[in-house]
Length: 320
Image (cartoon, rainbow, N blue to C red; front, side, top):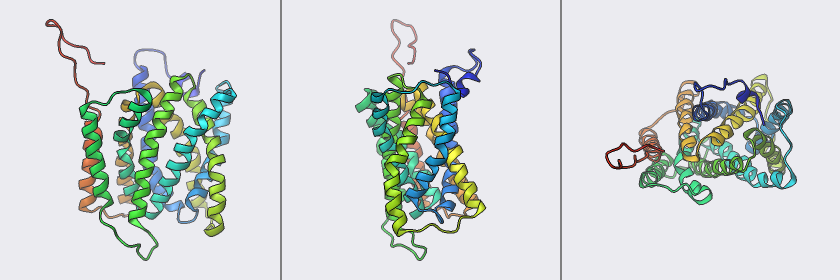
């Protein structure tokens, strides 16, 4: 089935599927880097799970119109139900932990800790897709995990603003792990013939179903703050750009690339997120942040190293 982004790309060798997939996934990650700054501001007014539901409610009609215009076919009952688990992992557990962690920690930590996702993709890709991890991938996973613990740092009590860094950073680790699993599940779904746009539409609809009860419980104890034009603009950005567009681009990347290669594009997120967090929110960046950040980056990069095959009978090997 076609989609507007795919249809707009000329069918020539200047834009092969791997390049298109890398551009799509990198663009999504860059959008999410800016999302941490926006969500940090909106979360001062809207509680985390409530914001997730509002975000999906804004994105769903956009995706529905996009899907209809692209003439996508509706999934059968079995295909639709199979995406419920994908949505639970990515659009309930991961996004809930992400927003909750960002509220209790910082936008910079949110972008940085979740950048461990490419390394965490490795074990899930092996278990679900049979993408066997090399020694480089296992080493990268170990380095990224060490970096996450350095960023989290020692236990600190909640400060006067009500933040709780340890809990917030722990939730961000959960967000990274569950997002890695979500991404691999998306790859498996597209391998089975479901388009990236269909995956995005259905998991968003399922996300509202999963998260609405949690948001209702949350609102009973944490009321909404003052809704200003700035908050409305932030919600629209989160719904249309960070959800409808970015999730499609990320899913499209995993449709066109193998899981570990697509995950490499996630590095755009911490670069954008850290820069905007420091520039716009004036968040301090301590030594542990940079030390842990370097380990996460190195670990994720190391996990992507590919060993060239040995030459055969004097001829050069061809990389896969």
